[in-house]
Each structure stands twice: as structure tokens, then as C-alpha cells.
Length: 131
Image 1 (cartoon, rainbow, N blue to C red):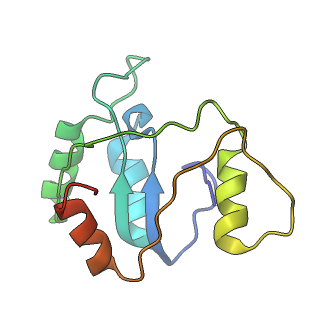
Image 2 (cartoon, rainbow, N blue to C red; image 1 turned 60 degrees about the vertical axis):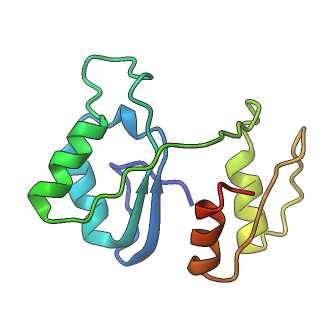
């Protein structure tokens, strides 16, 4: 489920994925909140996409935050990138797929999706070059 940092993030999440993290403006406050409430945090960001001077979400700032909080930090570069093709309902479609919403939603183009039974299988997929 998508959340904004200033809204109510669940207290005990298993995994939180932060997309567009290059837009974060207050690293300590915003990441501190997420890391206090989730077991695993995945941060997706692009150092070349900053738009406003107030946006502070850089790899260097995330590394500094992790080091200061003694959090393990594993930076990875994307091998490939899939775009939703400006389909504004992508989050609703994923929510419907993952949580069984009865709402009928469709995408304009197919979405490639792989499901893994275990994190180990996902890790092997990444190690094999995503093939």
C-alpha cells in the first residue's frame, strides 16, 4: 500500500519499498521513521533525477545515514529497468494482484511479473543476471 512519509506508516511492516527516494528532503526524519517500523527497507532512487534543491536523497546521504545508525547497507545498480508506461493505476493493479481486491482494474500494456517462493530463489535470480 502506498504511503506518504507524513502519513501513518504501519507500526510493524515486514518490508517497505521507497520509490523515488531521491526526492527525500529530510533523511534523518523520514528514513528514521521507516527503519523504526520495518524489518527490511528497499530504497529505489536515481542520483541524476533530483529536481528541487531541497531534495537530499543521494546514495551518499543514504550510506551516511546507515553508517550512523549501524544499519547494513547494500547498494545495487539496476541491470534493467521496466517502466509502467505512465499508467497511473499501476499501484492499484499491483494492490489488486497481491491482495485480491475485487475491483476490476486493467493495464494498458502487460506488466512483466515474476513471483518467487523464497527470498533465496529471488537472490539466485539476481545472481544469475536476472535470466
